[in-house]
Amino acid sequence: MLNVSPRQLEVFVQAAATGSLSAAATRLHLTQPAASMALAEMERLLGAKVFDRARGRLRLNPRGRELLPLAQELLERHAEFARAASDRGGALSGELHIGTSNTVGNYRVGELLGAFVGAQPQVAIRLRVANTEAIANAVLEHALDVGCVEGPVPHAELDVRPWRDDTLVVCAPPSHALARRRGLKPEHFGEVRWVLREPGSATRAASEQVLAQLPPPRSRLELSQTEAIKQAVVAGLGIAVLPEVAVRGAAEAGRLAVLRTPFLQPFLRRKLSLLLHRRKYHGALLEAFLRSL
Image (tube, rainbow, N blue to C red):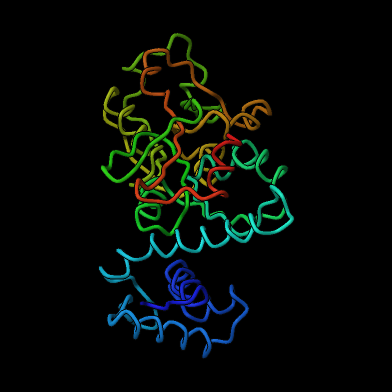
């Protein structure tokens, strides 16, 4: 019988999440030698390595990627057994690893987490904010329990669940010629400077769809954060497609103008979606979070 201990599984899971034994040891309140010994003993019992070591970082090898979701499930089931055997009733504890795209993480985090945090105050939330592509990849690698992103993410191993509708707008500086023109038409957008998100962002994908309906731009400025793009528009560096929730305050304050573009509306509506790995075990924490939404 293979006697891999819960502690060894914890070190394996945390090392996979952080890419570092020292970081895993810190999370588990262990010394680094103790964490290293636990991982080495697990690999000895398995008769195989689960990580490739490169430049001081740990990266899951194929064997590790195969075993990681099973290790996570064993730990979650162990925690559920302990809760069921205790007198704590329905109180949950532990960690939930959530990833969000920039729009959700920066502007809708209260909607996403508020009900769950209020109902489960003992659960620690580890939130990662990145672009849609990065969050989808992290869910696929089992580094996150769940992701919340904009737009479709087609992948056979991902369960994509609609969460909220989201609206994009085309915005410009109030002094821009387009902001002063009534009855905008596609031809009015010729030779315009655009400010765009980076590739891999769902907002970038939507922006490319919008640009395909318009005359060629004069130039493009590429930035990796929605807030940076908003400030670039306010500063007069160009126009942009941005989430309505991100620009609402600046528009109400008169710092930027939302352009009336009914001919672009089919390209300015999208779904916010939850991403789950199809082989991910839905433990009590994850199920409680999904119910809260």
